Image (tube, rainbow, N blue to C red; front, side):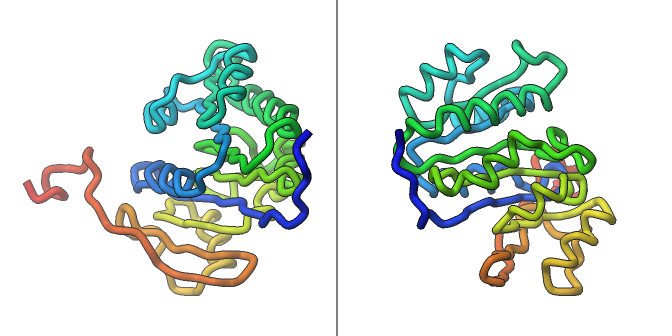
Length: 224
């Protein structure tokens, strides 16, 4: 059994923003810089994370066990065991990670894209909340992408320690961010790649990122 670490810092990162503004690229950079021994990622979005991290996805418990034993990036795709039911697959994966965490010594990361498509604001996601509530003891850090934070259950939202907020397209999502960030940010018109960062534990705030033009932008926007 892994040694419990009461002094492991709580790291629970959210990256909210509309599609196509660079959330996945930022997500990958943040996770890679952590240098964790295990990276557990839920890949319900057409294998995007498997391609990004260049690993073969797992589709069942047998392959999950083999990948976990090997260490490194462990990606679970729910397409075979939970076809058309990504939320159910996510609950299974949460329970799997929590079941194996005690025999894995060292830093671990748990994450997913489109969190608001997996847990909603109405039903408390118990399996995820266990990881968020108690994961620090077992050196589990969490990283999630979402379209809008207001669409995520409050028991999940309140756990986040860091926010990298990119362009927004939802008034309710903007209202939630306005309660955390300095006033006056034009959330609907942030350039692609630009984010506003807030550490909710320390209060540290800064603006970061590098503007870019999306590959699928119109010819006029790209200046062609």
